[in-house]
Image (cartoon, rainbow, N blue to C red):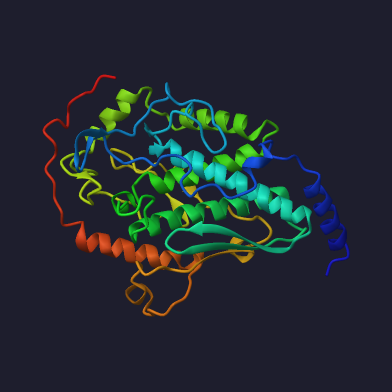
Length: 357
């Protein structure tokens, strides 16, 4: 061992202990947030809902409605899906959720590091089975290292939500949410939220003020369409190709295009089918400590909704971790090709209708 390493570890530890808090009320950092902090969005516009014939579902927004960021959400946020010319469709609610999860996890890990608890775990509720997060943290880790680990955990949890939803997990019993799993904007929006959450944690401003600024800057850089009406018209351009307005929620026929490529990098899906390499996103990496997965484990006891034998070849498997997520995603992708790709829908006659707001 190098003679200077103990001094570096000691310096790093005291540097972490004395670093700035994230400036959020402590009562909001005591327990994990709900798995869905903000109402999730359904891709499409004017989508009908089964058994409620007069209802039309719209989850789009525009820059003119997007308000300041509030940790764990508020009515002033104005969330929804927007279209950006460089980043495709972006779900602002998903983005905010993952930023808040990153902030929560960062704060939780830092507190345990300050208390010199190197090994600890936290229960994360039930979603497809009981979830437990196990961590191994050392004094060597800087604040930025912990931000990256927190972001990686938050992103893995967002991926698990997509996997769980595909396999029957739902917020409301007997109301399936599989129709929304792996929606084309989800993964990209989630990873954007991780990135923005980390930048906000680095800021000298409060987390909420920094997130508000980061979101505004991001949308400007991605060239967000200026109005809600513009996003509506962007949605209608792909009606019949990416989604169907003739189907009714929660039918699987609503979503026609999904994105299962969520690891380790994500490319935005643009209307013209082109690629924009400058806005591709990859999971953040630890510059000196190696694979972040060495320092945490998301352990999930799968419930009976998962066809364990079909996925893993073992129906007696007790639990899985984030390292098993790619196998589960591959199974979902193959199911999608087998059962849903052959479905063909005619475009709605109102596809080119321009809505006024």
